[in-house]
Length: 118
Length: 256
Image (cartoon, rainbow over all chains, first blue to last red; front, top):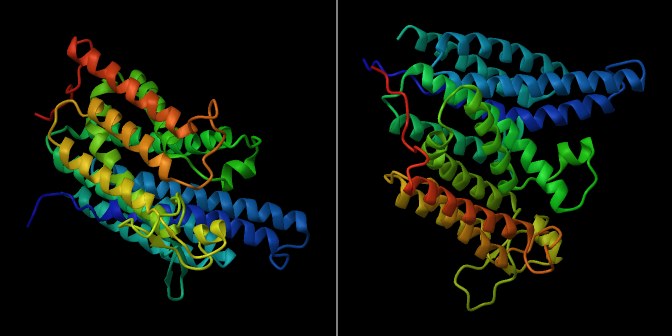
């Protein structure tokens, strides 16, 4: 078996991140326009802003975790889990791309922890 | 043209973003392949530096776009505006210079080792441009070999108001970038040939581009052509400094 660390976390993190960034902005705008998720339009705008920033920060964290995956595997695995959680939250906004991103980050996290044992 | 890739149940994924991601992935894979002997700590520094330079690059690409097109500085223009590659690269390099000073690592050595990464990611990025229909060219005539037609609803279609054969400037640039990559990949000083060759290529391709090019400088050259000339100038300065041994281009920390 090869002792080389896997590139899977890097690929998952970067692909998830670049897909996640624009979808986070879109999801935030969608929520801001939906009054069904909140009582007033101001609440909707605040909620939209929350989901947008959560998605953007989750995507950036995913990219960062992917980039450092080979040099600091354990840290990368932990950050991937946080990114998974942050992207997962935006699923409430009906952002189905977030489901894909969450799965990618979760796979990245598993492989990062696996890399840590090498 | 394939602006969005539809994944059943999940929705659409922007092909431009996907190709930017692929560019970064292949760029990092190549960097790892060429620098197998680097220590993990040094690699960690480089990766942190890369990540921060991405963020600064994004900011720079938007800031330069706002300046080039004389737009007002506001959050909408920043978040939803278009990007310029050269502005992004300049901001990235400035951020790398500052961080390398803080981390006490050699800026020119890092820049030199990142040239293949820049070329690979830029190559993929331009293919992404072609798929999304941006950065398009002028109308080509029938006697040109490489005229392409974009479908209805695409950016070039909306610009020209009809389907017309245009220069695939994105593919010209993409092809030339990968050519530079193969010519430079084993050179010791990659900064000088990269800056000069890319500067010349970009300067010439600008004549064939027809997407909005920003406010012309002195009514002669576009802002990107002006930056191309600065790239060429910096390329010669780096050559002079390297020739006189005032800078070190291959000072990297090898693991023992």
